[in-house]
Image 1 (spheres, rainbow, N blue to C red):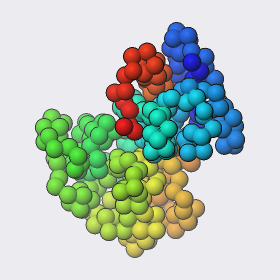
Image 2 (cartoon, protein in one colour):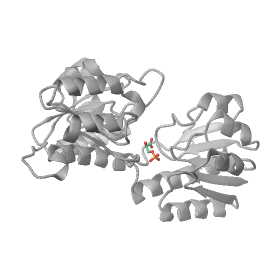
Image 3 (tube, rainbow, N blue to C red):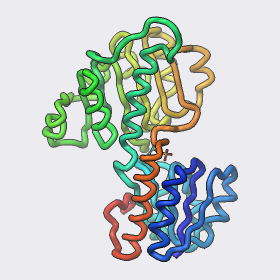
Image 4 (cartoon, rainbow, N blue to C red):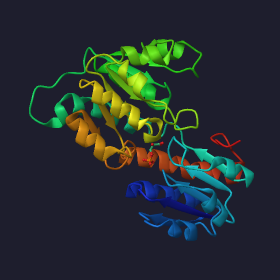
Length: 307
Ligand code: 3PG
């Protein structure tokens, strides 16, 4: 059995060592492709592997075509919008993610971004506190829950919207108010933390109408995916409303224009860094390795996302 770890954005060394240890114990061969700059490198590296571990690396139909022996892809992380799941299914290749393993790192960054923008990006001048403000959580999954709990600990009033959670006790147990609609969520949130996945339904869904419904001085915090944002709509909203702010983990396609027109009301990390902690790398990377072994040895498909 040969497993390729293909990470354009590498795991911490301790995570790579841990992954190798788990796979060596199972007597699997391991190949490592890090920081590649050309798709051709990935196409060549997948040619003879049985399993693939990736992060946000694009596993397209072309990659799957080149990977003649591939049986399983594990996305070490939550969002699997980078993998062509349909094509993998057509080819009988199992796709899994490792839900929850890197959530705390992303949640911590969401809180950090709220404080950073409230303190004028750490430049001189009077800022504001997040205590006492209303934090709206859009999608109450693994990351959303952690952001909500951290918000509560920081004295925020936390409200959330998630149409896929029908059990109200999920919100009640965290002391979080469940709101009935996405419109209500945005209209009440001083800080709106986005945790929706990038799907055909959500892409470009957050734009002008939702932004302009937010209270005075509100901030949109995006540690989800840049694709869920309607960038033209957000830019128009922030141009019209000089009190609104937008912070994003990963630069939008129109980052230069946003920076120029919005100044300190806009901030984006140059490269997605929500899950860039040693802890998250270790949790997600080792989980991916264990899931591969468990799949080959026991046929366990618990975390399969392309059934
Ligand atoms: C995820 O979906 O797990 C996060 O966005 C982290 O992505 P990354 O592995 O590319 O940092």
